[in-house]
Length: 124
Image 1: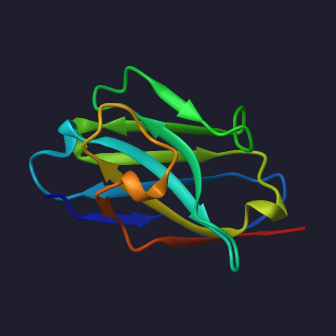
Image 2: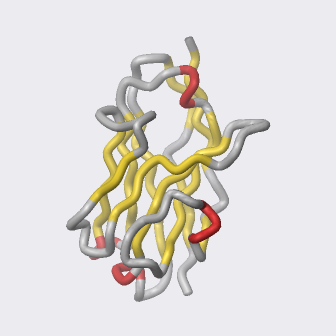
């Protein structure tokens, strides 16, 4: 089992950057494939990026490819999401999630553990 806590959200102007962190408890963080999602009011939870346990492979949705970068530090039990060139439509609650699958699925229902979320607001 793993517990996840996101941080790093906040208010930023369009064009700005933020880095989200997801701190994991437990000794088995390195065995999980991880993902970042977001959910805006009235919308479905949206896959953004995923990374395999060894960080050997990363995956991105078209909406964030080229602007967001996912990474992990297994020694620090931490997952990151670097977000550049932010747009007002990026405003949402951002979640990290862990899955036992070897690849990061885009379907949020296939993740086993979730953080509580962190709010990101991008002003125009």
